[in-house]
Image 1 (cartoon, rainbow, N blue to C red):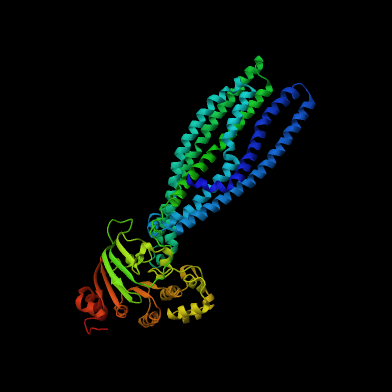
Image 2 (tube, rainbow, N blue to C red):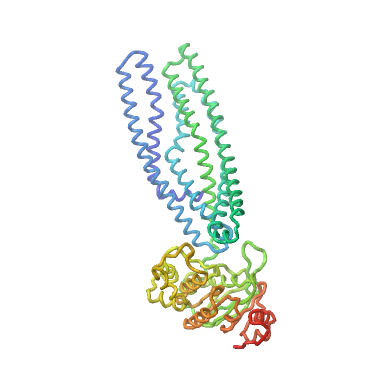
Length: 575
């Protein structure tokens, strides 16, 4: 398993922990042997010196075992916590490299479960393996060997029982792994429902859908409970079976032992020692259900963690990339571009071709589902085109380093995303080293400066999660300011002015003209499109028209229909 490699830096700590565990194990295996000496050579012969000598030895060794156990726990905790930290770091770093296609395959609710619950399962198992998990089977093997050394005739019973129990436990382990794999997948579903409910709480209350959402959560939660109960019930049933077999073995040892003692074939101390070994084996088997449960869950969790770590990063710099980041001007060319999402079989873009010159303003119009956002996502390489080519400044976009592309793009997505923190911290997402003057200028251009000043602490006002204490229009303008602060060469606005009134939008568009950048705006407003150098008209993923407002108004029926729906069938406005 790939996840095991994360233990490599902790080899020394693991070696120390296992060595100390072996010291504990040795003491535990030798104590029954010393007890047999005390009984046979001391108590039965009424020799107090022998009793005291072996008694002091047992106390001293027990003290050594105690110190070893405490130190073992320290190194086991250090290893398990360090392992968990490294795995979470790697998972988070891996997720940061995901393309949108990867997120389509592994939803965020599942990723959260894998980075928290699954990693915690692995941590606990690592700790147990260094503390008791490896010690348990070694104690069974060691006790069997020591029993054979004490009296092979009595211990032969263990040679019959133990292999049968091992085979049974291996079957249980395999079965348990499958059950707990299903449990973790149900936990994903519960997290998904919870995430959707918490993020959409306002909408749920507005539409009075609380009862429906409660029933949906109840269904997912009950499914998780039933799967967990089924898995735990299966694992717990092995305990009575194991104890039944071991108790039969213990009774057999006592019965045969009494016969052998009476016949002179065994000493009382030997019988006591073997009974002690059988008892300890029984106690170990009594915790095997817990160990197997933990290991089964860990194995399922390890597979889920590795599934994330092994995701191939499909958007990365190829061999043809020039590692030098060229200065971006902003020329954009689409050549026969077609695109489909990994989870679909139908192209959402079909043979799209157009050219945008640096510094131009382009508006993209089209009905919902016409492929506007999909086209936008190909420019910063959030996805790659399925067919055809996207070029930037005359170079294939795949030949330019990803960082070189994205650092020159200001992208405002359709769904406004703000982060917990102050207004200034959100603006600094656009440019980490931006000065307060740069923040203020970007905010003024985005028509949000006055609003920020009216907040309780101005630019230091802390926003709620996703900017919950701002209106829709305020969120849009703040996200636009975040894009403007980096002074991008390409500005992509995905329906980012939909919540703005016409006057505010006009001021914003006028301010954008001061920036030396290529601006592409997805919009549903003809008033916005009229201010653009070029308009692209999309329908069902096909580019059905392009040109100025005047040319489309004369030659495109769809554009005429959109225009008339917004301005009526009266006077036609030309620009």
